[in-house]
Image (tube, rainbow, N blue to C red; front, side, top):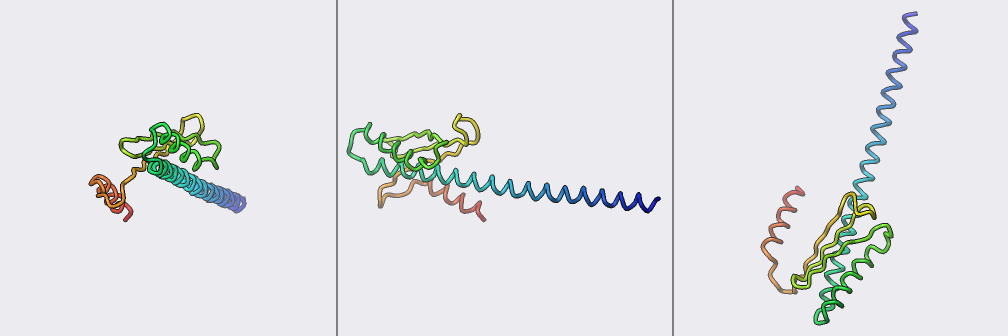
Length: 142
């Protein structure tokens, strides 16, 4: 009788351990999938901001409304493959920069992914703040 109880107890412990291991495996896979989707959204925001600032630079000399329209169109073209995303753009003609905000839901709520790109004339010195940001990023990578 005691031997049967011990066998049943072992079986329950092994079953519980198997459930814990399976749950941990599912959690790890879900976390990796979530991190990969976060990276893709940030990359999309970065590409959209770059496309917008390139459109601003390409339309230099034209009237402001055409330049802003071109920057917005470039941003929307980059995110067109993701119909659920509506980007919020902030083009700045004076600073020659474009900021883009993407949210993980089309309600505007949820995790926001932002990126800002600034046009620097070829041969122009890079601003000290940009250099410091790059150095900090390099340091944190290891």
